Image 1 (cartoon, one colour):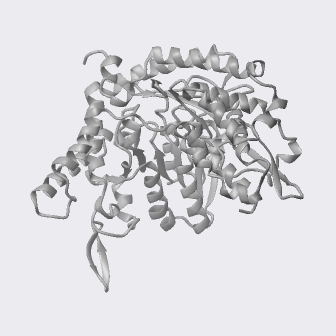
Image 2: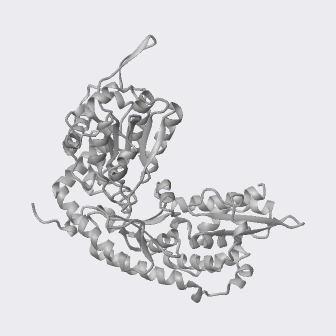
Amino acid sequence: MNEFNVSTFREHFPLLSKPVNNLPLTYFDNGATTQKPAAVIAAEAEVYQEYNANVHRASHALSAKATTAFEQARIKVQQFIKAEYLEEIIWTSGTTAGINLIAQSWGQNNLQAGDEILLTHGEHHANIVPWQLVAEKTGAIIKVLPLSDTGVIDDTLLEDFFNEKTKLVSFAHVSNVIGKVNPVEKIIQFAKKYNAITVIDGAQACAHFSLDMKALDCDFYVFSAHKMYGPTGVGVLYGRRELLNMMPPYQGGGEMIKSVSFLGTSFNHLPFKFEAGTPNYAGVIAFAESIRFIETFGLASLAKYELGLTSYCYNKLKQVESVTFITEQEPDTGVISFIVDNIHNHDIASGLDAQGIAIRSGHHCAMPLMEYLKLSGCIRVSLAAYNTVSEIDFFIEQLSLLIKNLLSVEKTLPIQPSELGTELSDEQKMLERFSAIKGWDLRHREIMLLGKGLSRMTKSLRNERSLIQGCESQAWLVATISEEGVYYFSCDSDARVIRGLMVIILAAYQHKSAQQIAAFDNKLFFDKLGLSQHLSPSRSNGLNSIVEKIKAIADV
């Protein structure tokens, strides 16, 4: 096989050549989802354009062709993960759906009061909440495996947690935040010693490691297509055949039945017993194409290149002043998580976004991990085989510049903070201020400057009562009302970008009556400011939460 060529590989991904904020895209959010190659996009489009028909349910030619392609995709997955039996491959909508299926079908029917479920501090919410729901219903007890200083499950303490009451252990092959491989084989050995079921979340491993279910010898393994250059809405649940046969159906509907009458219903055999309703057959067929795409370049070649890229990025980040990694040692995959001293994670993410760099900040659906590490959140860079050294160099350059600017922004304020209250009490003046600014990078800088100028609330006012629910970062709002019924709001956030957005919001709502607050169109206001199209859905939700808090206080 030819040596991996990243330029050739990148050419297959149309979105990578599209500008973002009128800048070249640097996509470092692959842990959330990977981009899709043209072959995968075309494969899904071909289904709808050439042979769209529901699978398994008709005798006509289109359905026969769709069904054949659908079931060939199942064979492709079986071969890709080296499962012993074809019927051990169950289609789901993703990793989350797979874990919920196991929790509801196996967990609810096999766990009893006092039984123990082992999870870890490093799990995604999708591998915590389903087990909490089952534990509440069955009386089972959840115990949590600790992590080592490097962020992997501490295998020296396994003996302290496994016992005769242990019925199930569910954990990530690779953490979506830490990016390191857990001691999978050793945990499976302990589970077998105590006859416990093993469930492995492979969402962050499926695109990076060769999988062999027969060799791994786990009971269940779940993963998602969209993490490995495939379509969204498609996932795989691998389950040991004898366990799947014993489990009752998870959902009822078409395809999962043999016969139905009001006297009783009999269920289909594997794998169809767990595939009720019309499946995402176009997505499944496109997923098979993503596997073929990976195989064309070679999974080992992709992984080798990614590992070198990860090492390069990690060592470059080590040289950036104020960067602190959340755990010790270099990661095993392209997921690198860190914080920047004295700067909020969202301020880093929004600043990089203004330069066309897509990274992720926050708790990454791993709140218990953040609590365990005593962090409010972190910044995550996640790399794929289409990323390049030059992209990393650009990212490091922009990150270093951003840190410098954020730490010195008070020296470049265009106006004094004492003047902000007067100028920004009028929404028209705010509109005039932003109308003169072109481009998201300059508008973002202006928001950050406004955030720096907002007076901080005293700590006593930053409490549960004033906390705004629904913001990515912590944010608070309090109000006083005059005898004339005019409201004055004070607000704050631990993220400067949110403080800046708060200043903009207060320009519209400050010194207004309840009637004026109710009548104001904040969506139109942000559209006129030229900000709506640049705000992420989560940040837009945060803005709406601030406005809702204002309206709730004004009782409108």
